Length: 383
Ligand code: GLA
Image 1: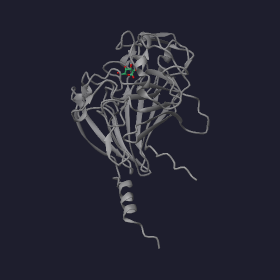
Image 2 (image 1 turned 90 degrees about the vertical axis):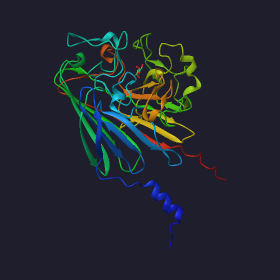
Image 3 (image 1 turned 60 degrees about the vertical axis):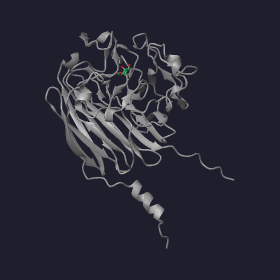
Image 4 (image 1 turned 180 degrees about the horizontal axis):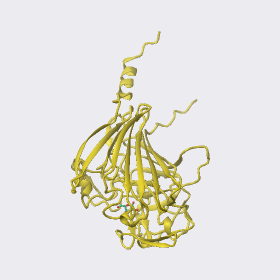
């Protein structure tokens, strides 16, 4: 009879954490306007813990184990709603929309009608607007379990004309953590009663060494993109799609983020802030396409981002300004990155870009999966 050794038993105890039946929820305080905000906790059996709040359907904490089994929160954020409502909040962890990224001069024409949106990133419209963009409103939430995994579904109906966008838009964002892996899947659904642009993403800022670490430039990144959309001085795409080869944007093989970033210090983007066009999925039967993979040697943590979206915005935290975040930690310039899966910026004004207009008889449906892991040691050479 084979008897399990103590070491094997201990390993088993560390790897299979007992997960409660239901995701739990708690009071996370109130907005300035007096609305109550709830915080939901989703937990996998492998150690990942995600906390998401009803304000902005926002990812507030994301704890994942390192190579020694030690857990750290790997995203930037705050310990209270006031932090998220402060000037320091640069879209930390939020659901971004109705249209993420930029719309040139806040203008577009749809079915012969001109629309004007708020200019909140001179001279353009950024991330859905000012007061009632999807990151700032309080959503309804329902926690659930599926196949032993934890989920929470957020729902919000944005009325016709909110932030200048046409149509009553019913939006759902679903966060799901399966029992058996350290994966967080974020799925988006929307229906409208009038044609309207929709482009949703999550704006989490990652640092795999733990949020509040001084830099992210030591992380190694691969982006599954041979081309990108060049931009003008105001970060609006010129309409061209160009090759990344022989440029600092070539992440087709893994590269240290800091290796070439200085070359972009004086660019309009002040670092990486680019939309990469994902290579087409080789195997069309596969649900997801690989967007990017990120690793951090010291902690051993890895992140693979899989998506149904055609592009990813890689933003290297260039505007982080040493704000004080969770647990009093400081968020320094380039101490975290965003990897925002999405359609191309300004698509509503670019006829040749993939369509972002949702019509009343259609359903907007997309999904992105964040798969955390541990770097594998190189395989031992066989004789
Ligand atoms: C996006 C943009 C950046 C910046 C951040 C928020 O990633 O592309 O230029 O506005 O959001 O600070």
